[in-house]
Image (cartoon, rainbow, N blue to C red; front, side, top):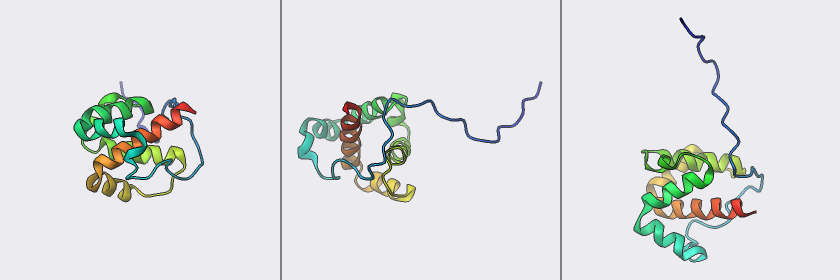
Length: 115
């Protein structure tokens, strides 16, 4: 009983977040004052906010707890929203400014899911 090898990546189910070609984040990396409550949660308990972002984007909520999970999610968000960048910049952003990027991702997914 052998199975044929997989030759391409499986296509993901359409996420509830709308694809866009706007080309930029709706807020800046350091615009914490635009949603103080979300930034307070991100600063006090980033694990909760990362689970919220993952779930709100349509991924499993535990993705935020997996090492590298938020970098992968940021890359996917960037691609689906048409925001230019690279995987290397995504990884550096999450390593150097993780809290700020997490808060920005939360604001982005919240804003785009409302429209």
